Amino acid sequence: MRHVAALAAPDMEGRGAGSAGEARAADYIAGQFRGIGLEPGGEAGSYFQSFDVPLGAKLGRVNRLTFTAAQHTADFGPDSFKPFGFSDQGSFAGPLAFAGYGITAPELGYDDYADIDVQNKIVLIMTHEPRGADSNSPFRRPEAFRYGELRYKAFNAREHGAKGIIIVMNPNGPSGREELFAIRGGGASSGIIAVNALRSVVEPILRSAGKNLAEVQREIDGSLAPRSFLISHTIGRLDVSLVNETGRAKNVIGILPGRDPKLRDQAIVVGAHYDHLGRGGEHSLAPDQTGTIHPGADDNASGVAAVIALARAFALSGSRRTLVFAAFSGEEMGLLGSAAYVKRPPRPVEKTFAMINMDMIGRLRDERVYILGVDSAAEFRRLVADALAGSTLQPSYSGDGYGPSDHTSFYAAGIPVLMFFTGAHEDYHRPSDTPDKIEPRGLEKVARLVFRAAQRLETRQAPLTFVRTVSPGGSGRQAGGGYSAYFGSIPDFTESDKPGVRLTGVRSGSPAESAGLKAGDVIVRFAGSAIRNLEDLSLALRSTRAGDSVDFVYLRDGKEHSGSATLQERK
Image 1 (cartoon, rainbow, N blue to C red):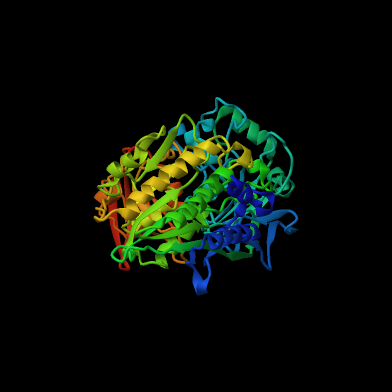
Image 2: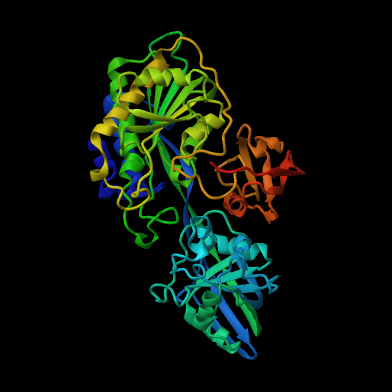
């Protein structure tokens, strides 16, 4: 609990990857490893393995929004509009169109783009979705939440041929206030120049077309039907310049050498991620509390506390195989730290016997512990059952070696994995994930279970039999797994300056495997949408349903190929 409290303390500032708070947390963990007597497993004799992470974006040299009608030009600067961090950079001038909420939802019979051509235009749209305050609105169903996401709106405009998008706060929203909320995060470009502007900037343009924004919104909400239109005699121009900022994050690695001459060349990795969301951002589930520290006591100070406790226990008892204790950063950005580890391991990947991951193990309820990856080695179910003998813990198993945490990077590299988790809760990714919510005795029980499982691994004489598991439609830390259909591709989470999504593999028995995709392929088009990056592929998938037959285009060894797949239900 002292480790949980220290890592979730205010001076750690939520441990955002690449931040000063993350650096302080890394120093704390390294100090613990040093005190235990672990050997440094990082660079240049240190405990740290560093790697690049995206930190966001800031305004560059020229950012301007201009409207020209007849002989009059209105020119606006960053006090009146701001680009999104995911905006394309450059300039574009063209005619304008109003496209309501910017939503295309065929399953709901609604499409703001149905009756207008926005090819090579700049579209003006509103935030949120129709009847956003009505709990009975079809857009308030969980599977429709994506339509209110800003990145979705930019993606949809791009796919309809628009070259620029201006998003304003809808005037009839809960607060009705006027504010700018871009830049937000940086990262992969959306492929369209995208900005957020004050309503006072665009309302004169709409009045020149005989429209009032608040009235148009009421008409859309009242009839649940689009009111899109072209704006004649006005040309808009967007100039966007951003500076994408990167930083250095670091894994913390300590090594306990094995003592058995025959087994010590083999390593077992015991890991947990220590980064969290910092002060919120696009992954926070409390977007109205951006700027507030997200302590991440359960996610994942709890797992790191167990890693430290296990390191201390094994330092006392010894181990036949070498144990590598790793605290990963960059997990919340897409498993960046564990991916960096696998690419530059302190002990060879081919000599890595197994990997144990702990993510959110501090909120045990009803003695229920979730154990993932039990089918990633043929021997794991028996091994875990033996480790559970005499315990009051009630296991819930998943055989799949893939999931949204750091064990995935190891499983994709052909290493058997076990992942321990005590379940999602209402404080997940919110500022309320605080140390006082941790259940100490439950945390102790899970850590002891992991110790017993690790003991059985480090003393085992026989090899493990690695198994590529057949997924029944995805698995994950949280129940539900999302509302899109299931494809089964495993993306490379590291960023690339080349368009497309590179795959590190595909799940056994998945539609992606049946369609012939394999590691190294790069998806560049999916379900009719151009795929520039992982965000595009995610949005394209979320527009599909189980049973849909989708076409896709991919690159293999630089050559373009086409394929098709029938998507499955996500379970």
